[in-house]
Length: 218
Image (tube, rainbow, N blue to C red):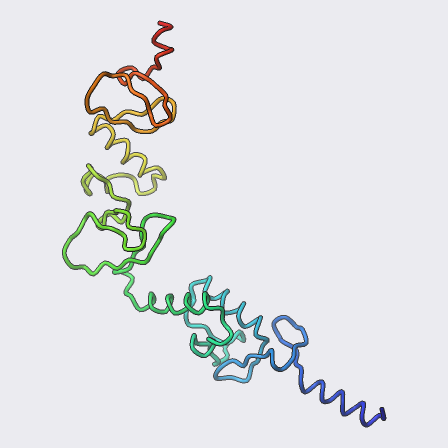
């Protein structure tokens, strides 16, 4: 191969590749993605990671990685490169951003946390989450506190980390429940003698919370 041919080949290879300014790696042109509204171009992998990092920060209006640049990224514009999960997450976040903060709250159950909307209509207390189908108090925005009025619940210290346990204990007192000394599960006595077996087959006397073996030792 002559020098001219080698130079021509090098120029051809250069024209088909570029250096991504984010990962600083040489990429092929077919791996590039141009930012809308500006001249900046990055590799697809870095663009996807950049969008995901912004979504993790709850940023929905995503601009060019270059500070003060007018370029922008939008869900539909990036649809072809984004994983379906990221695209759906972005669209959901944009929808949520349109809801006034005063009307927006989340299911109080940590393993659900579905977005819920308070339409400020009729005052409702006992509600069901449409996602996990568990009951919660729409006034206090907590798990349903059966047997305790909202005013009493709201008197609890807001920074009390075990407030739900306190609620349960108050309810147990009102309903005259007691706890199995073995498994700590709450038990309600409706009729019959005071001797009972819990869900783990541990037998004890509800009046003194002692097992049959302990009573025999007395």
